[in-house]
Image (cartoon, rainbow, N blue to C red):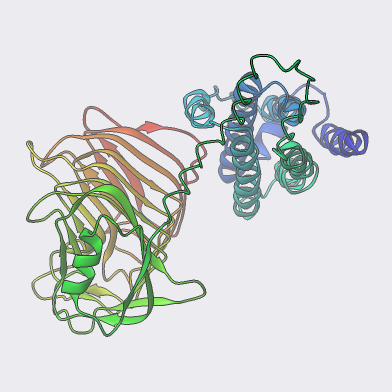
Length: 460
């Protein structure tokens, strides 16, 4: 099977080499590639750097995972091919800016199964990126390169990692039953201390039975907060449409994490119809909040003042993932589109929100009637995988109120966004932005000291 897969990828690469050729570059060749195709080509190269570096690092940690070595070798070949294309069209070969990202990704891998899951996720996101890049690749050679990378990710590379995954699970503990010792006929002397029954593995703390409770749409905000504060509760499940007349203030610092999520198969909608200009959740506004995760919720019909649907201040270890914002906007009187946000994170020099993750949001700003993410200071703020359309600002992040450090922005798709000319604005922030793709939107502005690092893979 591996031979067949290797043959497929080799064939693809040979086809690619046929397209690029090995002749010396000519002036006419250099003039036959547009700026957009140049950008696509460099984006492809940075993506291949990322995959190659990540897989090499993981293989060093887990040398038994041979799929990582094989795919890294494929990626090295593809990097060589892409560099030939750069030479053909007289484009300076970009340096590998993905080393740090690859190191960080590999360092977060702590198990073999996790390593394979990371690889499969990276291949899928690569295929998605190639689909987007193909729309701007108006040069035949560059278009062919995009197709080869996408085909390899969805085909042979995915197959190799899937096979590795199957091997991992196949070899995973069916724990070899501690070989029942052939009862050694011990001469009846001092009776051998009853063989310590292989200490019955301290019953794996039956993952202390997770306590899951329901919060229904007919219950009050007070009830919700009581459940959130109850340290015996692990999961709060929702179902249906929730409508409140005032924001819910969360000033609860948990010692044990809690998750708020839809019940299995449920769709959960928070309606802003009766909130006036308020947001829905204010986290750490009058006290400290921490160790809370909320996920999979829809926010519909908010007419906002100078606030976010989520407002985060004195908080740590807050995770808000897989959210949708729709049919919402600034009220147009006390607040304009740049005053009203899906997520609004703020700070002071003394109070710095820390370890805040807001990932995989889908935000429609209703004809640029509101903005998506504002970060006025914080530490270790992560926002990845957002899909943003029709907003005023996609991101506005700065250190105006408190320092903004370790801000990570990755994998954003931004469509029809921007103030008069800017869709993403960064000022005096440390961290990284990468894999940002904009269409019909304002420019990205990165000012001040420090500056965010360009992590590559951006198509602006």
